[in-house]
Image 1 (cartoon, one colour):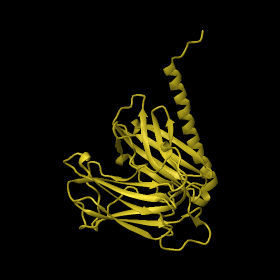
Image 2: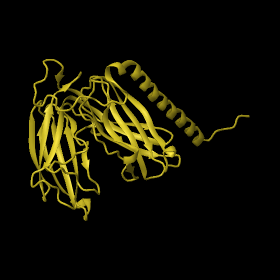
Image 3: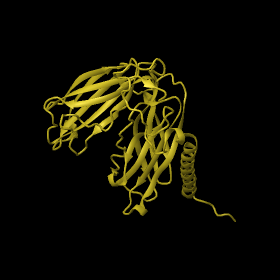
Length: 332
C-alpha cells in the first residue's frame, strides 16, 4: 500500500522541483549565453560597457537614439524565508538585467561575501545600486538573481535564490508596474518592476549647496517618483506613486564627498516624454524619530537632452539637484 503524503511534504517536494528547475534553467541560460554571445561580448560576468548620459551634451546619431520603452526596477524584496532560516539574514550576491543593447550585465544589486547586506524582518528590501544606464524594453530581456545567505563559514553558506527571469518585451501601450513572485526551498523573492513607455534616461545628481559637508548627526532618504502622461490604468499598477529609493542612510551618516556631492546609491531612472520626475528628500536628526523628518521635493519635466536644476531645502541645509537627460539607444 502506498503511503499518503502530507500537504506539507507535497509542498516541500514541489518547492524542491521548482527550485532545482530554476537553478537548472539559470545554468542553461549561462551555457547558452556563452555559446552565442561570448565572442562578441566577452565574459558572462562582464558588466555593460555603455554609460549613462550618452546624448546629454552630444547630438545623437541620426538613427538609433530616441525615446523608447525601458524597464524600471522599483525594488527587490525577500518576501519570506523557510526551512529553518531566521531573521536577520546576511545576504550577498547579484541582481542584474540583460537587454539586447550589449547583452552584458546591468547591475541592479551587488554585494560580496565580505560586504553583506543585513536583512531584517522589518526591512527586507535589497539596497539597490542600479541600473547604471537605462534598461531597454525591446525584443526580450532577462533579470538574473543569485543571492546567498552567509553562514559561519563559507562552506555553510546557503543559496537563497538562483534564477533567471525572462521577459518578452511587447509594445506596451502605457507605463505600469507589476509584482513578480519567485519561490524556492528557502525563500520567496518579490520583484517590483515594469515598462516605462516612450521614455528618456534621467541621471540624478545632488550636491550640498550651503557649504560642502552634510551636518553631523542628521540622516536622510532621497527618492524619486515618475509620473505617466499617457492613458491611466488601474491604481494598483499605476507608476505615479511608486518610490525609487536613491539613497537611504538608515542609521549611518549621509555619504558626501569633499566638494559636497551626495553619493547616491542609485541615480539613473526612466521618465516618460511629457511625464514628470519628482526628486524628494526626507531628513531627520539621528537622536529623533523619523516621524519628525523635514521633507521637501523638486519637480522636473522630462527633456530629451541637456540638464535641469532645482533646489531642495531640508531646513538645516540646501541642496542643488541636477538632472542630466538623454535619449536611449537600442544598440551599441
